[in-house]
Length: 189
Image (cartoon, rainbow, N blue to C red; front, side, top):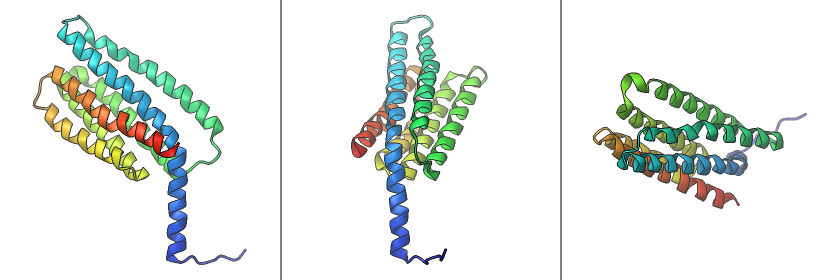
């Protein structure tokens, strides 16, 4: 078989078509942004409200997260069965979010030792990295901007009390997961 040398325009066209195909494949990932966005957003607001009502063990609302993990796992397994083409971008996203998930668990594990207040600042940074890098890989500005806002809110979170950090988490999730997730879904439907 003879190899054909591509000119710059043909190369760029191939690269763009691969990115567009990957974006279309990853538009299904809007499920994860929307699902986790609403789950974390709701949990943060419920936790905040329960603290204001002085409910003992208000933090128990976060026990919904393992249930979210189970739902995500089932959804991902079903999606993988239907997957026809595996892209490098999809593989990179899997490694990105897998490493961020591990980082999140490690930070939560350290919470007892380092305290709750610093942990929530680190969570905002982790959310920011995930959405910023995903947005860059997908060339999707709402995710990039959401990630930048998470970084900004992580700095603000260092200077406020824990209950206000919960509101910052909710705000960060709204602009970095929920809104971009719905925009991503709309863009590719």
